[in-house]
Image (cartoon, rainbow, N blue to C red; front, side, top):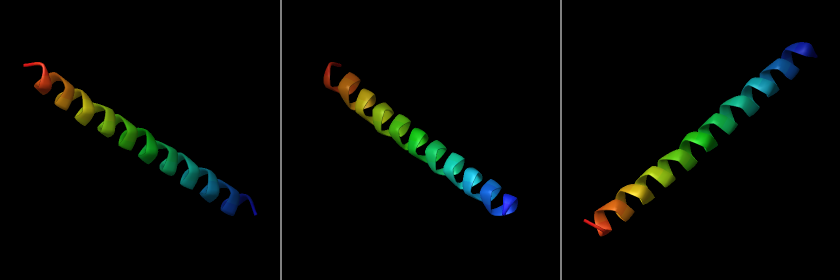
Length: 39
């Protein structure tokens, strides 16, 4: 039971970090386009 619980936590951490990096990537590409627009 504890093993599956740990695996579930690891999965949640993995998913949240993927979502975080995806949001970071989206914001970065938006910033690059925004800066390019004002050049």
